[in-house]
Image (spheres, rainbow, N blue to C red):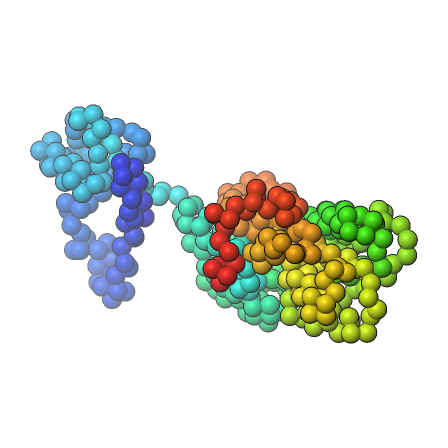
Length: 398
């Protein structure tokens, strides 16, 4: 494959379409279809080590062994078509970058199409394109069966490495076995898999930071006195994401004295389910000062909507995880009860994952786990990290 760049030229010359098998069988070397002029032009382009090297007419004729007149005509044609340039009028430079290394095929099985997953997927697409990597995408759709089926499909398609982003901890070993049998390395996003390189956040640290933010909010609103701590979990994801919950609970317990109720609800990380569970709880619970956090922004925002529906918004304060578009919009609301959200920057995952994949494929030493950066986003600092001029309103992103 040839990639054109430099001197204002940007284009891509794709690999020639494979000839039908019957045509190839009758003439294995395809010489009957060869255009000598095109072959000579390609030969000239290959003699430029990179697009910074410059060569004279004589140097190119010497390297290729072509007659000087033929070389001159080929050079002028290539220049006219934008594949070569003459910066100083005498020496030729190439606008073409020839890919000589193996073009990797990476399989990516995404979680689903929510805004977090889509941010990860889009970042991967951009980074793969920049690094000349073929990205084969599948969608796991929050389904264990789909994840296992997709893994086998990716193996059958001859990938060099798999990036798995699925929520079920219980099938991690099965997925790893599918790839291991085909000797395909795996990167596991957010949920660890046996034998895979882990990429995601330090979940306990995320929870601890959320807990600190909750404590600060409780001190500002209620002088540090609360009646309830509401924790919204995602049990199917297993023990690692649960560390967000235990980290938050530990942070609150260490800093807030007095007695208060701790309530765990399995929100599954879903806004609608969280809304229904919390609304049902509020139908029978007395009015009380409640701190809320959970496994992600969706769960937390669902809980906030439930408090709002029953007229108790003033009795709750929440901290989310993800700083997703929906949470960023909420943080910009003047009457928000969302004190903050722990940003995990999924839009940056793509570059990290592709670089990690390349390191693995090039047999470089990599650690067993790599943690993504995190940051508490609040109504006070949101524009610093997510300027509204760059990051569109969630409504326009849908």
